[in-house]
Image 1 (cartoon, rainbow, N blue to C red):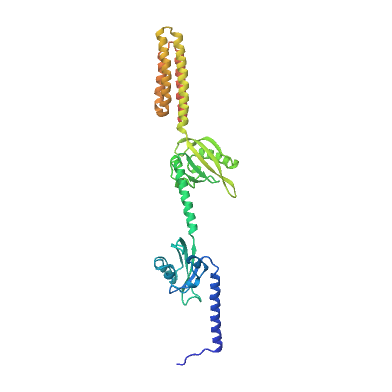
Image 2: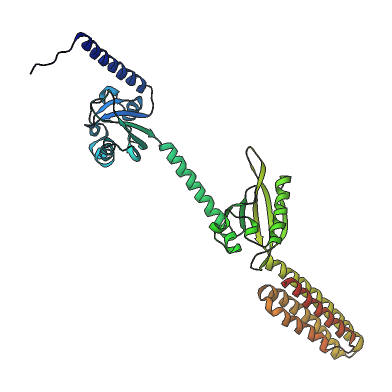
Length: 369
């Protein structure tokens, strides 16, 4: 069978194609010499056909020392088998994908590499090949880890603080809260963040809080005040609240940072102690005056002196007991009121004493509501 021969024109076309391919290869190599990332072309035999400037920097050698070599000769057999070979095979089968891994550079420093493999068909390889783009993202990863560590430390500190801490955006939506705030509301952070006050408490309380938040956002000034809050389950709490604006760059609207303390029981104890002291002082003063006027016997006068001394002892006991066991204070006050009443001769102070005691009960009832 005769062998076909190329005509002159066909020979010239073949030469032009080869020239064009050579020029293309030279252009690709020229472009790669300016790229700082690790960019290369690998053939189906795992050999480098072109590499960028980044390879020279990373491996500490000239690109001519890498081209034509097997990947295992450049990266090492262990790295090639553990991280690269299977990924090259996937790409040669037509799959484009990305992966990441750690490996040391020429100085022995561990670097985190982000790798993308793309199918390649061109003049640099005979048959299918792989275009490899590798970017050193070590600094980005370490910066992210440092940020996460700082955020974790900040969360630990915030959650260790017993005061209530929260932050809202300019729409009044909760963005951050600590453990104390979660326990105070009775919800987890997942059920608080992303919600507004209208979804967590009564409409009346939510409207009041939003009005105070609006004052902080518009004035751009911090405020501190006592704030009664009523929740949807009927609970009422008094908060010592400190709020300040959270200003964001390029945004005229401010968010709100709140730091609060539940002072419901402290305020009630203060009011109870104040009333207890007032009633006790008034009752024993009137009782002592009545006994002094009505009785002139030395024995009774000594009894009066003892009663006055007893006043100091019992008053101190009230101050301690009211702050520790609030349920005892009614019985203690009744006992204190009964002591002077038993020695009275005139009945007007007794009536006044009962009136004072009744006012105390009404006052305590208004606090419990």
